[in-house]
Image (cartoon, rainbow, N blue to C red):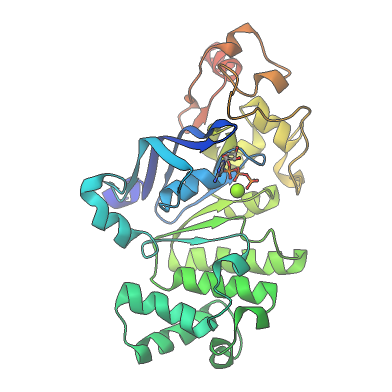
Amino acid sequence: MTGRDQAPLLEVRDLVVHFYTRAGVVQGARGVSFKVMHGQTLGIVGESGSGKSVSVQAVMGLINTPGRIISGDIRFKGRSIMDAAGRDYVRRVRGKEISMIFQDPMTSLNPVFTVGTQITEVLRHHLKMNKKAARKRAMELLELVDINAPGKRLKQYPHELSGGMRQRVMIATALACEPELIIADEPTTALDVTIQAQILELLADLQERLNVSVIMITHDLGVIAQLCHRLAVMYAGRIVEEGDAVKVFENPGHPYTMGLLGATPRLDKVEDRMVCINGAPPNLIAPPRGCAFSPRCQMAREECSNPQSLAYITKDRQVCCWCAAKSREREN
Ligand SMILES: Nc1ncnc2c1ncn2[C@@H]1O[C@H](COP(=O)(O)OP(=O)(O)OP(=O)(O)O)[C@@H](O)[C@H]1O
Ligand SMILES: [Mg+2]
């Protein structure tokens, strides 16, 4: 293994993002840290409002007013893409070396431009291609994502395509500059089930063929089990567990992960959707002291109101839980 392979492609450290709303300061990310390795897929799961989108939007430079990155660092290929000194680097990296696929392609594709114009625009802007070269490359990209009659599609407007086809166009656009990292924020939620499966298969195939790294945000645990090497579980603006996806499924360490996977999680019996856990996630304007999951946690005890950060329970697994840390101590 070379040094390049061992160093993370992307590293987010202690990211804190606040949104200044009328109701108060919403703590969207409360110290999020994760890594994405070369050629690997990191799955991020967690209930609605847990900070999944905010974390990846920060990576893409998409936190806008009323939001602000308060602290933390985001490093891509070992360099910070957040500091003022590296501003040019930041702009060059986003959209080119890191690209994003959103949930609803209709909101990211511009309805007044043809598919061809939108893909070639990316190529001309980032790769400085001329019109002819960009059109040729756009055709190749549509073929890459299994779109038939690419010449015809290039002349069509987004509304003329089916939902699945639009998402393929989004993926083609995301691949246009041969990014090293693709961030997919619930890329198939807006599609019906059979189309979802096709798009996921396509993403998995492209990930392997092009050896890109992927961050996949999803509510679908089946997708994680199939596609992801690593899994990060988010709760109330924090990652509460991170580890090898298969091992987390086999043996979840955090009570919240256990709840998500059902009481007795098994790889051969992965629930398709996350199961419901009693109670509601905390208000991120005033999150509880200590473990934010403790009000809903059956294992909660007094010490859970003390601050606890992610700690290794095995060499390769991090869990943010006093109980998990305790049982690990007992094992040692
Ligand atoms: N523009 C915004 N203004 C105010 N609050 C925001 C904004 N964007 C996100 N938040 C808040 O930040 C928190 C995290 O939101 P985020 O969108 O990351 O959740 P999520 O995990 O992606 O949820 P979902 O599964 O529903 O997409 C939530 O409490 C949300 O209300
Ligand atoms: Mg989201």
